[in-house]
Length: 330
Image (cartoon, rainbow, N blue to C red; front, side):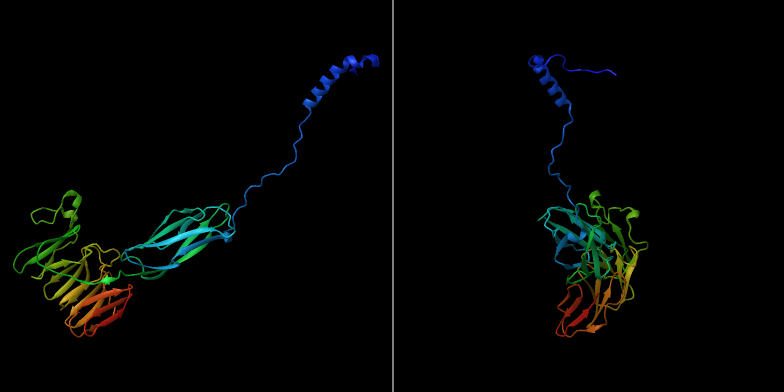
């Protein structure tokens, strides 16, 4: 076994060897492992429990009409007051209900909007719910919130459908009258306005744009459109009034087919969204649901001149006269 000696000789040589000792000491110290000084370690942020999330909706519940849009204001955050953004999503909603969140991620103190729009004629009238999920950093499962919604018909004044035995357009729909004398008929077409198409009798329209399969015979009273252009009223021979589906979604009858047949009338009045028809025969008034053709209430008789028809709150139908009529409909 070999032995190494750093110093050899008498002690009197130590002063001469002092620089060597200092150098070797420094070398050994520099090669020694460094020790980490103890200090505070930064802990990762804790995840958010679902119960800590809150979501405020204004209004807290709502009423919206077919084809219209309700805007709900949203504000979200954490009850613990930690400053994490909250992600909102619509987790459950009926297929006939369109929704949109803007924005979907809400920073602290930020407000957002939830737009809700039920499809005209397709959305179920009455009570419904929208389910909203809220998540934040580290949330293992979302917290669910619910928004109560009531879907109603569009409110407003009814308008009488005016008829005439002449070709006429209504937005992007066209009714063309053909024949003469007592042999008049009408056919309905889609108009593509971007292609410069018009309802003029002298301009040919492609057969593929025809809405009805067979022509409707009409009297000298002719036909007319509802103001939304979704429904047409055809005055047929033998005192028959036919409401025809031009572009009414959710109806039982296909486009171009008859939604509702009525007889022996003086006039037909339609609601703002053309989904309620009030048939007037003398002083007798009867309300109908246009998409399904069903009765909405019993026949009621007014006294005096009919001065107006109004749907209020989507459910209260009033025909105003000296003696008025009222119906509660859905």
